[in-house]
Image (cartoon, rainbow, N blue to C red):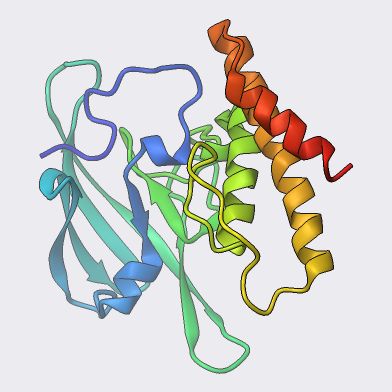
Length: 212
């Protein structure tokens, strides 16, 4: 089964969530970085395996072995080493890092992202998911963050709760004002993109004005 990115078409600039990550912290946590280990690693979607690779651990490196293809072409077997580096932790112990194997890179990173080769985010030119957000997406995410702090259910279309027990009224009123500002911006952005005039937007505007 191919490595991450097999057969993937380009949709503009991919994000880190579009690629299959290989996280050295998980390998270390599972005790897989011991010299002489050979093991498989796989990725699943909704409980179904969608890709896998084989790895074996040598002194200060791991060997990756998998199949890859691009744009529906022929499968190719890929096998190459990824060097490891260890740094001391402040409270004892050591932290493991990958050294990106892409030509001319060598960055010390915790995560490699699959493609024709496993490489760092910079080499794959990946953005973070939040960098793809529209302004109203970002406003909705911030509104939801405030809803969590207020102990309300997620989603600006869902009912609102009251003041959490133990929260100062001044803090509550500040958060409410920020929440309505973000919710207002999110509804306005969605309405503009969809060409709609939302009655709920008018309601939010009215509530936001109460806290101006």
